[in-house]
Image (cartoon, rainbow, N blue to C red; front, side, top):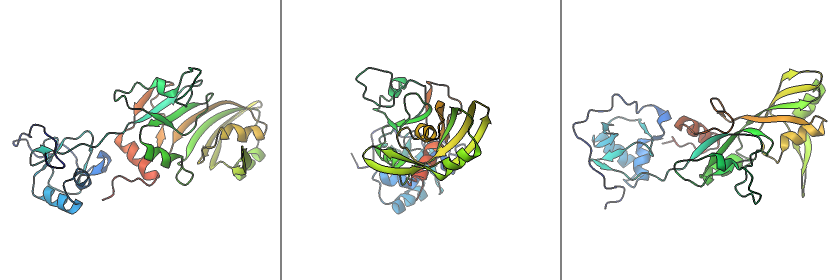
Length: 278
């Protein structure tokens, strides 16, 4: 077997070019010459020459012009009628974590874990990205992609997390100013560090309750609850509604779905793993 090829039936040579498939849509995934090169078919420049020869097809449709983007996992890409090797597929899941669910994969007490709610057909070994404590709900990303997970949780790359919070008491403007300036929080053996909100908005303010929307770029343990507790406002309800460009729209507590190609592309770009560069 030649490097870069797998043994599958050849395409139907009579199938028409891919006018009905918009390979110029960058949201499809990766540049086709990058995918061909990753499959061992030569340099990106030599793979561009293969495309110019008119011997590259995607899902049976001729791709003869660049730029062109493909989904290397789901698209069937052939050169001279022979399919190229497909890369190992990682799994990226967005879960609406309900209250009372744990993010850890290891719980000796047998309580419900986030991974227990995701019956993914791939049977991939997923793990949660970042922290969301047991009594909090909302957006939780699960994956088996260690590189992306490390980038998302590293202090130099962390993307904004949006929370909607309900606290007991009336939060005044002076309290909001303190949250924006930052509050020193200790993390065990380490010295106290300032924790602050990147963006802060009052959604509703009553005499005995306040609803806030808050954006953080850090992922310290129970950070939102600890910041508000320092000001004398116990958190009654906390929900993460967004993570970077991802949001919970369309999901109910306990539901999950795979990320779309465009969502994954935006997430990777936010942490410096832009997969569409040539």
